[in-house]
Length: 120
Image 1 (cartoon, rainbow, N blue to C red):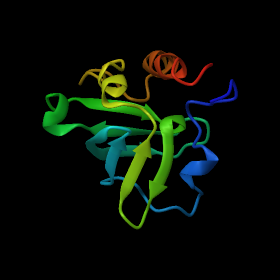
Image 2: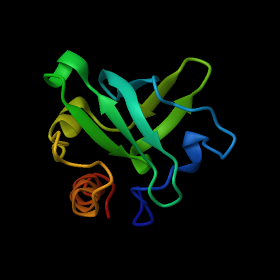
Image 3: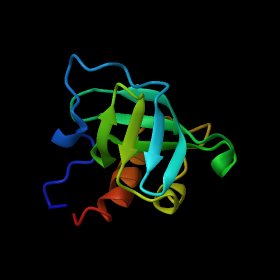
């Protein structure tokens, strides 16, 4: 990835437009396997993200994935593919029950964490 990576904007390869289907409920796959399902999604310009319910994989934890981590979306199969490993996602800043996924300080921590994987 280049220094132009934007955490909060879908990449062209994700194929998302204003007319795209809602991805809530889609399965989410890391490079090394299934990690959960999309629990919430925001397509706000410059603030796009998904919240993934990991179920039993990491003890029911929910994780926030910026839209920039999404490599592609397969609407026909109902799947979201991210180009991160399970461990990279597991070690992300925790989304606690008391933390809003729209909290600016939390979003800054998350964006900073993931930007390390994209050479920015």
